[in-house]
Image (cartoon, rainbow, N blue to C red; front, side):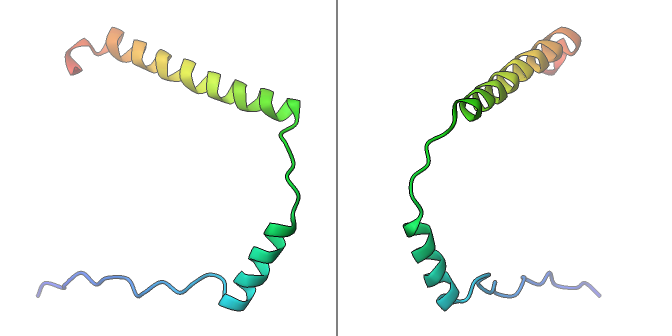
Length: 69
């Protein structure tokens, strides 16, 4: 006997509508806060590390697995 795959039940909203309205109001009341210089540096370093890592992994693939292109 083969069981049919069952679809998951409909998702229930994580926040009820009344609470969602309050949440939206609170978010709109918040003032804009620009990024701090240290946060900008952290973002820049993270992106740089990711790009360098991708380049290194690409070099490893080309060097040690030349037939897998």
